[in-house]
Image (cartoon, rainbow, N blue to C red; front, side):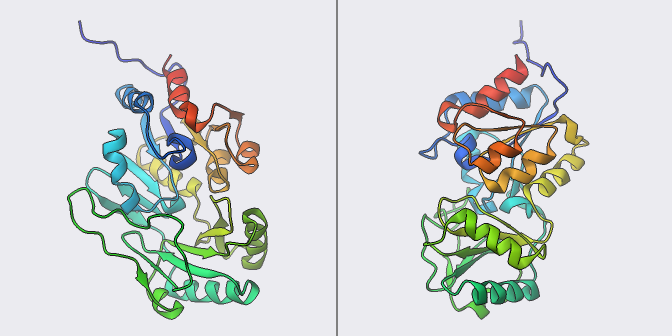
Length: 281
């Protein structure tokens, strides 16, 4: 007799999960329990969406880790990326004029800031921008070498559109830096963060994880009320507020907790797996 496929017992058609600090454990791994839960969700007919600040090149390695090959929302909503075909489906970048205007205003207000720009397929930064983690995988899933980061002056790195602008002041408090930059830019860009130090993630005006998830949901004919979302940081807030039901992991930032409908276990306790299991029970 074939195995019984579990169906969600509530009206849920999509599960949207953040990655770092939410699905991934603190060491960056994906547990076997989480892999099993993701497979069960897909077999039950749920759309599983990874919704992350990561750019596309940092999504390919998750295919082997999770077995999931769906469409991801990357760069905090600026990109829809098909992990199976390694193809960007849509992008909502900051244009050159916006990049140069925003960097000029931010530097005038925060002289200690250094800038990086995320193009999606590669990265560039000023010489003073010090990386806090490996900026590129060595190769993509097909074994092709990924171009190394470009290090150049601000005029050069803002000479083409970017899906995300990064503004770093290592000495700044992340929350205070975000509040100040939001007031400065006054709705002309989306400012958020997912860090424990002063690293802002800036997207085109109106672009958030919620808008990226809404675009993906519309492509699948899924209504907001049919979506369960889970996350941990300020860049998840818009998504948690928009989804029909939302949860913050126990290790979440206070802003994510406040935006969510409930709080579940931590990322190291496989909170996403537990949530999916409860939906399919």
